[in-house]
Structures are given as structure tokens and as C-alpha cells.
Amino acid sequence: MSQMPQQAALSRCPSCAEPLESGDRFCGACGYDLSAVPPPPDDNPTLTMTNGSAPPAPGHLPTAAVVAVPPAAGTEMRFDHRHQPSPQPEPAPAPAPGAAPGAVPEPAPGAAPGAASGPAPEPSPEPEEYPLQAPDPRIAADMAAPPGPTAKVCVACRAGRVDDDGYCETCGHAQPRERDHMEQESGPIAAVSDRGLRHHRNEDAFAIGRTTLPDGAPATLAIVCDGVSSATRPDDASLAASKAASESLLAALPLGTHPQQAMHEAIVAASHAVNSLAREPQTAREHAPHQNAPACTLVGAVVTAGLLVVGWVGDSRAYWVPVDRGAPPARLTEDDSWAAQMVAAGLMNEAEAYADERAHAITGWLGADAYELEPHTASFKPDRPGVVVVCTDGLWNYAEAAEEMARVVPADAAVRPLHGARVLVGHALDGGGHDNVTVALVPFPTPPQGAGSA
Image: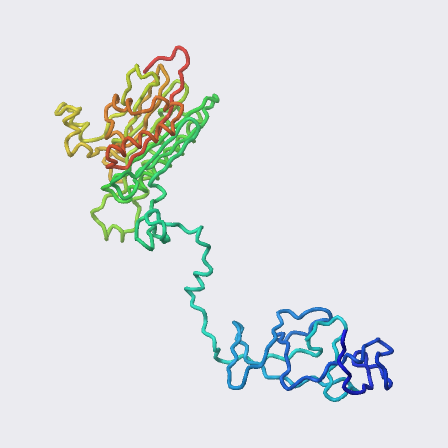
């Protein structure tokens, strides 16, 4: 390796300060190479800035060291986000005692090249004003946002981002809500609910479940609710009613409560849940004094070994469709509606009554504005296997008679309930989908020998 010539005789070793003799090329104490003393620095030395930290230990680089090169005359120096002022050149370090004038001490063996042997210069006080402008918070927020794949993309334009209100920021299209289409399967039962083709939201709700009776026999249940559109918050009413009714049944049946009594209590619990929604601030009533309280209809079914129980308030229905299509189907509920009252009074036949524009005006519902709560319950003992169709008028409007419903229920609905529920919802949508559509299918098992029909 080539060596730089020594500029002047040294009286002491630059490394260990041991006295030297004239003509020595190496220190007799530490072995330092005396011919490797670097030339003196020029007028513009290179500085190592460490933000005022202690000098690095031998053999280690300083943390985040910055090498600063002095700018040309008349230019301004700008720093990074720390906004440190421009450093002033420091005078060259004094040579070791006995060193030649202008000589710079050689760093200890193993020290980083270019690192200063003395303490780093202290930073100047921070100025009152900074030359750099603070970053735009909107840009910073965009940079901190999660990557694109995690953001919701518009289902219409497939490009815009969906805002917190559920609308596309590019095309303004309203995005599907969680309740626009819902499906659930629990063992042998299943339910499907869809917003339909004309409504702006789904005001139906359902709940399905399974439990065990005290004797260990299984029990299945389904609750379907239809929010009353002329009332406030119909979607909240249907959801509260379906949840309260199902929870009541799941709690009562394992205790040995008779399924028909349990269904009655479940409807009462659902009514209380909907009534509680009417407890709103007085200011809300002042802004909308003529609006009705939240309301909904309800229909439910409980299936145990050899027993079928249905309960309802309003015009949501339950149908019985046997697996053997040679046997007659049946409608298990009677509507609380204007049309049903006309038929019961003998003033119209069923076809005339349901063709009237007042046909779907209900006379019974769950809600604080209801005239009187009259839960209807009925029990049956089918003598053959079949499936119970529990649905809102969004379905039975397109298959009103029991024979019509039996024709659209798939033949394998008892063993493929989710598929069957999807087919029924599709039938309503194909027919026009004017209303929300919700249907639950509850298979009825083969009854024990000797069971007769009620």
C-alpha cells in the first residue's frame, strides 16, 4: 500500500503520545506508523454532525451521521424535517503536542474513516421561523391511509371509493346495505331475505335457531318479521321483534314450556321490544308529530318431534307443503288484514277482497300504536314429512294460494332448505319484486307411529 510522505518530524507519537527519536518510522510503544500522518486539512473541512451526541466509540459509526458539504458563496442551505440551522465551519482540531504545524492526528486503529477524533460540534439554537413549510394534513392522511385493496370499491362503476355514508365518491351510486340480501343456514333450517327490486331498503328481518327439549328431543324454530313502511324505523322494529322472539323461544323450550305457550310468550316479548323503540326524545315528536311509532308484523314456527306450532300477528304467513306432493298443502295462518275481515264477514270472496287496493291494510301489528295485542297461535300434528314455509307478503303476493306455493317450492326443499329458500326468493323477484322478500324453510320430520293430525 502506498503511503503519504511525512510532513515534519514528530516529537511524540500521535496515537499514544510516547516521545520519539529523530528518524523513527514506527512508535516503539504502540507500533504506530509515523509515515501515515495525513496532510493538514484545507480551508473547507468536512464535518461529521451527530446532533450534539457524544463522540462514537472506537470501531463504531455514529448514529445517523450526516456529512455536510459547505455550499457555494451566496447560496442558502435547507435542512430536512428537523429544521436545523446551517452549521458554521469549525476550526480544525489542534494537533497533538509535539506534532508538526498543520498536522491532523491519525484516528485510533479501527476507527471509522473520516470520523472526528474530538467531540462533535454543538447544534446552534433553533430559529424562531423555519424555512420549510409543514406538510398538508390531507396529503399526510392519504399517505397514512391503508392500501387500496382494503377500501370498499363501488359496485356500479368499479372504480370509485365508497364513503362512510355508503355512497360512491366518484359516481354517487348508493352501495348495497348489509341487510339488502341476507342468507343463513342452521342445520336443517334456512332463511333468505332480499330488498326486492322497488324498495330502497330491506325492512324485513328473520331469526332461525335450534335447541333441545328437556327429554333430549331436538326443536327447530324460525321467526320472520315485516316492518310496516308507514311507520317510523320499520327496519329497526322488524329486527328487534325477530331477535326478541327467537331469544324467548330458545330460553323457554329447554325449560319444558309447551311450544304453543312458548310461542305466545315470544310474541309478547317481541311486542315489548318494538314498543320500547317508541321511547324517543320529545324533540323528535315535535319535528314529526304525525308519524306512527315503529311497527312490524310477525310469523313464527316451532317444530318438535311430531308437533308443529305456528304463531303470528299481522299478514305474514306460514304454509304447510308435504314432501308427497300428492297430499294437499295448507295455509296455516289467517291474516290480520282488511281483506281477511271482508272475507270473514261474507262481504267479499277471497279473490275480490285481495284484488281491492285496501287488501293489505293490516288490522293487527306489533307496536306502541297497535289497538290491542292479540297473538294468534295454533298447533298441528302432521301425519307425514314436509316443510313449513314461513314468509312475508313479499313472497306470497306471487304465490297466494297454498296450491300455488306448493308448486314453486322445490321438491327437495326439506333436505336442501337453503337452496329452496333461494328459489322462492328468486320466484318473487322474477314476478316483479315489488316488496321486500323474506322466507324461512323449516323441515318437519317423519312423525312417530300412531301420531294423528290435529
